[in-house]
Image 1 (spheres, rainbow over the protein chains, first blue to last red):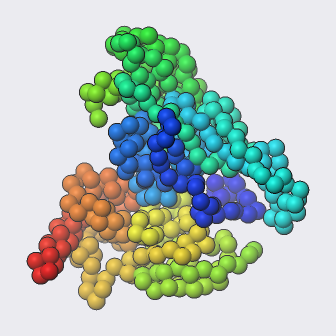
Image 2: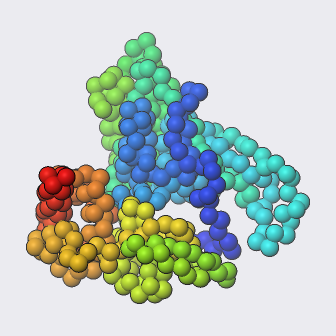
Image 3: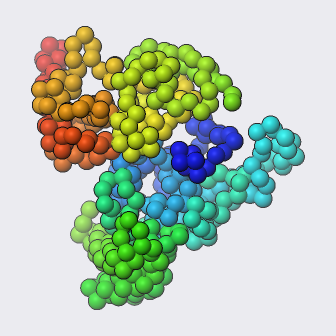
Length: 271
Length: 165
């Protein structure tokens, strides 16, 4: 953003020495991902591959392997570029964003002016993914707030997830991508989460597609209906990556593929 | 513009400098230290020509502020050879893993980390590993060959050392 002079911040704060912002651990029914956890760490983690394949899939297709050594999970989420991959992942998981700071105040100025009037203790906030992505490059975070981490609900038995992305080449943003998380309960799909990348001003949660999956046996007929519903929920714009109709067709195909893979994983038939 | 005192260990040697906040790591290396082996290609984190090892991991130095590397260890292409060519350099030469050479320093440093992590990478794993480094000359075939040959040379070197131990 600074490189393209889209953002010209008067100051940058290096958070590397702030403790507790990085790391990956399962606790109390969720996976905690520190905001400064590098994407390469997610990609290489056995824990995410085994238990959070949707997150693991996505981490393997963000930018390129060298970029992922420095790029962070929190950056991908809080930057909220419609082309970023992790917002849709967080929507599909029903993740919770954890923030700390002063949500109602502007960021403290460089000179320190005004800093004395800040309340002593910063406020902690939890924001559901559904309420977090408010517009292109915009989130529910206030200027005086930072994202500290993300809580992803731990999947119960019989759960599966997958991320399917079409990109023209490594490092490009998605033509479109689809994130799906679901579980089987009594032989039918329950609690499906379906979300779309780069086919709208923000990541889009495709609730009609979730409805088509929920209560179904996960057969091709249900997947076809979910795929059609996801394509209808997309709001793509024509650009160098394709026409509106093409992108909808891609969403349809990727939804079918991601759902098939998520189902195979939920049944223990695929890694 | 504020100044910062930083110590960055480059190719094993601690370098202390007063630098501007806005200085990029690639400019620190090229302009402050005169290490021009690290190239600037796209300037937008795409091409990987500026790749160096930052604490052992490949990083695109055109998108790292030098102040953020304070206290870190950086390896550039100048740090590869140790009296004689590094096995990766030797393999790139023998396999014709370059034509114009612009991408080569970044390509070799990414390969070094790749081989350390995966001493016997398949062709597919090499292609995956270097997918963040662009070459506009070779079509990658000889680069992939060079990386696999270098990996074999490093494995056999390690085997010999183990034999002597």
